[in-house]
Image 1 (spheres, rainbow, N blue to C red):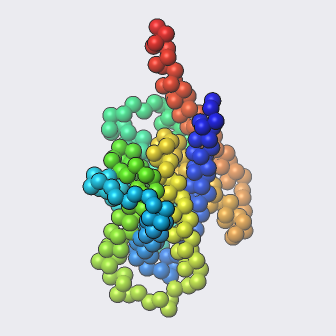
Image 2: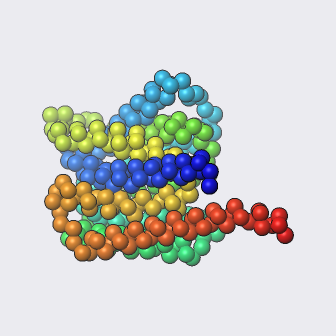
Image 3: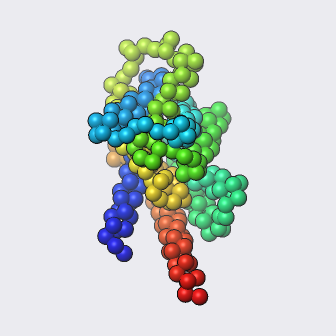
Length: 313
């Protein structure tokens, strides 16, 4: 293995670790933000501000921002599906659905991606499907006992299922659409597109008419700033880069790890107990992630060795 390949692998795991940790903490940040901020308006401003900051930084670095209409359209489709529809529904749902339940439902994203692949006629091995189901089982063990303490708001649950389907579709389409070659340029346009549409929807819902800055809490404003810088600029940029440099099945494992991060943060910040059930769920999730990674690496090795074997014959 060459040094460049080792560095590439290290970059993949650094980016994946960023998505694991930062997006695991955004459930808490979103829950705090929606306590006093208008949900869709703040979410739209979050992505709009992050997109503008990233665009300005790229322009300062002299990066070419001009793209073709097809590339701009592809970035807009992904941004609207993942940031406007999916994130917007999560923001609305977390006003009534506990964050643990939200994490459980959103964790079905990898399964939805596998279903999209099957619908598209792609070959999906039973071992990969088994790994995804194992991860979902681990998330259920982790979240259900502590999160399902009462009736779930059906409208909020439907919103989360819709968010899951939309995010999975955006993830599935991202490598299949023509988007800007520069990952950060693509990320900037995705965030701008998602932010603009979210703001338009918020205005249509009348959120601006009922806006009262005097009701904004400092906690919510700090959460908003965290979501802009880390949840959007840092983590989403890493996620977009991963979609172009790693397998979708590997990238989607973040949905298994995020609930673990949420549990750890709850223990450190809110003094929530870590029970044997939580440890069991975390162990199952780690096994599922390791299994999926192993299968993906084995598939890549088989693809690389196949041409050499054919040539030898």
